[in-house]
Image (cartoon, rainbow, N blue to C red; front, side, top):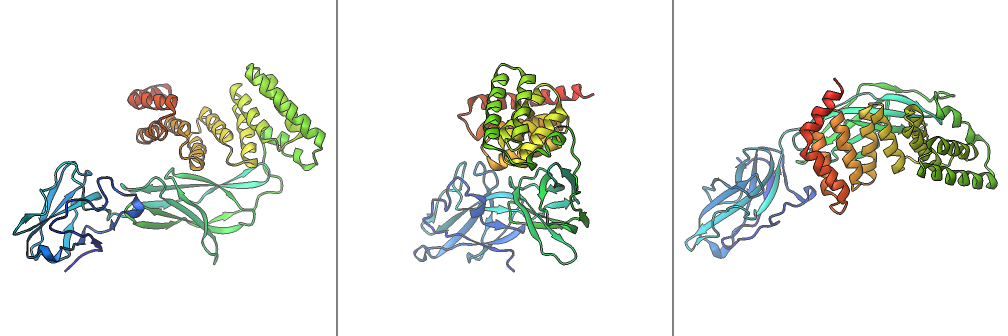
Amino acid sequence: MRYGSLILIAACACLAHSTFGATPPDDLLLPKAQAKRFDISYEVNDEAQPIERIELWYTFDEGSTWQLYGVDQDRVSPMTFCAPQEGLCGVYFVVSNAAGPSSDVPSKDTDPHIWVFVDYTLPIAQVHPPELVYRPANYRVAQISWTAVDANLPSRPIDLSYRLLPDGEWTDIRHRLPNSGRYDWRVPVDVVGQAMLRMTVADRGGNRVHCSSSEFSFDAAPAVPPVQGLGHELAGNGERGITVRERKRARELLQKGRWHVLRNEQELAASRFRDALALDPQLTEALVKLGGCMYSLRRYSESASAFDLALQQMPTDRDALDGYARTLVALKNYDAAETKLLSIVEYNPNDVEAWLHLGDVSIYRGNEIGARDYYTKAMTLRPEAEAIVAKARSRLEDLPSLRRRYNDQNE
């Protein structure tokens, strides 16, 4: 009896080179095996007949070492392979006839005839009902949290969707999210009522697991949403029209505020930015700059309000996301800080400074494994960013002591 799915390979008595080469192909191109036992088909040139022996060799360390699996006793394709473990597997055939073997047995750095990703374990996944948070400007954010565990998860394994009960269809929220355990979703205004969330987790082997949350309610946003601090001061300013003269004056005040920032006159700069926003509340840069001033003055709640308003106007603003993350770190809200930084790398995966800061936040959260992964990305994604590469390398080398210092500071 044959097992699993067929993985096709062309092997012949004179074959000496890999189908894919020494470098494994992208995951999308890799054959997948979702069972321990599966069949490998092969073909032998007619002129090589009669075949006397067919050996199957395998490697799980990208060719550093090879193991003889066995001999195909009937010398008739396919041959059943029982994988001893999960992971990226290279396969190599040695075919012999009266003239001798097709090649020497594989050794270090021999190219496999084919790569296959073996993964027969389903991910473990759970998604929780979201926490609904009301923001200034009358919108809602669903703070979605989940757990997803698997030894072979890719960098972005998470899909989220929702449906309204009792008979609504599943609607996408976001595809290919990183496994951060948290996503803040701005809920559309028309999504109201009882609902469920669904999460799909896909591992590198092509296994997919769906899980749903328990029922919860998407309440409508209140007529007057709760606002605090700076948000309360600015929330109503956009109701009237803005004249050309006011818009021009607002930009002049923004420029004066920038000048004060350069001179480290944070209070004066903040005053100019507030004056600019009183004239033009949609001046996003003034909100971002004001948030930076409040951060420098250690007035973190006002800093958070300014950055929050800026992101309402421009959700992808890199400076607002980074400033908000720094503010949240100062407030020791590390989970939320990580979410903001992950938004930056979602829009720009090569933002090595954000990866560096993600490593720092992981240290604050006590996650050394995550910190190592983030620092490695910061060090390798853009080698030309020498300053960031040096910082990431230093942190990687000093990772144990960084963790100890943080523990000492928080005892």
